[in-house]
Length: 371
Image 1 (cartoon, one colour):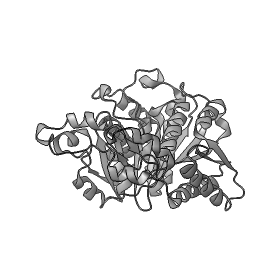
Image 2 (spheres, rainbow, N blue to C red):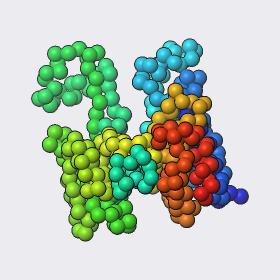
Image 3 (cartoon, rainbow, N blue to C red):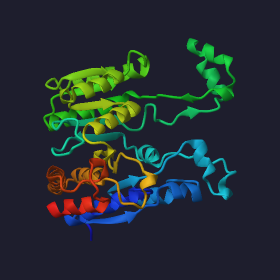
Image 4 (tube, rainbow, N blue to C red):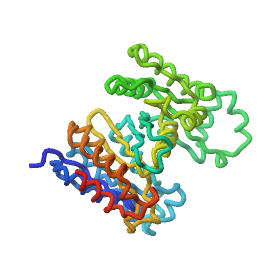
């Protein structure tokens, strides 16, 4: 009997291909797992009206964790036009499967390591080693939105004096997205960032927000961070605004270590950090809850490359490495990272984004050879 049960969620587009590459690496280190396929992705939206079928969520209940590839995601109106004709009149609304997984499974913490491996021609600098802790279920991506705006919502918000100017518009001409943050959510993500810094001897924690403009939600995040920092006197807490932080990361990336932010701001700075170390082809992530986790590359499904086995699988392979770490398989995780590092340093096998011509599975096979 396998030691672990892993929900295998390839998705669509190049997700299927990079997951195939990751499986080669996992098999090469004799990872004792049973992989249970889960339906997820654009074809299930088109044919069933649900990109994350309930049967997949049910299957995941009996697994230890999940590895996720990539899915196509489109705006609401465009998604509606691609539904089967039999579903067109059912008022179905597309919702991102990965966002739904985060919320349904309470995967409150998104960890995104961004590490430069020497020899990568795309590195901004070779000594970058950042990790972003992104709150995963609240903030601007919490999903509480309205269009058109219901009268009851508008009336409730009208107690705020700045709503007066919006009374000039019809409710059909207004759209509202909320940024809702809880003290518990803020304290949780900051606590995990500090605990990680303490465990791995990181030099600082930087809280990234915009409290001078987003005074209430940003203020709550900053106050929560200051409170948590009192328990970690040896680790400095730095406070920065999101716009300035993007500039400083380009100017002096080596000054920073652990960064922590709410949902949208964490998404923004983690993509910037990813580009500093080669782009999304190297960007791995873990969506982590109290008892379950979903690991994924942060790139999309790249429909134009589907079937070409062209994209870089390293982000997915490093996501599998994160999965092994989370499961307590540190030795196997370390072997994978060392093999990835060796292939990059050697420079003989490079995918198109690295200036080479190697295919997806040629990269994974090179990593297997190093193992």
